[in-house]
Image 1 (cartoon, rainbow, N blue to C red):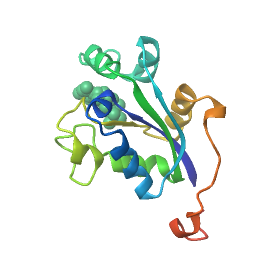
Image 2: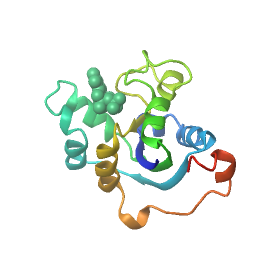
Image 3: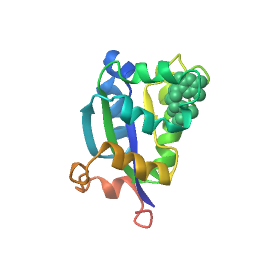
Length: 154
Ligand code: TYD
């Protein structure tokens, strides 16, 4: 099923000048960039975004790291994109993530781990709404579509 998912390029990625390199990984895979913007996060949006972690001891440090610079938010589309992008990101801790995954290739940390990626269909819907207005998501189609998928896949 054609899905959209939210990716955030975290401040560590911005600070390490890896914005272009990480976006390229998604493009090279065959995913379509449906939305793209830079934004400064604040307490309110992070309390919402990481609501499942507010009681964890690392939450203040996590929040601070996510506000260190603007982030780059991406709406990424493809068949089964939510799972595909999670697999591409790899497990949370970059030291445990396998080489070949984004975190495995670019991160040594459980916090400074390059990307956020929505973890399921419900989360993706809520998170895309949190970071993008409807008119900031674009429905153009890639001319390479027929080379990316079999006709019965999309
Ligand atoms: P989580 O939603 O568990 O992981 P993921 O980003 O892989 O979906 O955690 C959100 C972020 O919180 C994670 O990317 C980095 C930070 N974090 C820490 O800083 N320390 C930790 O021990 C954990 C579990 C997460």
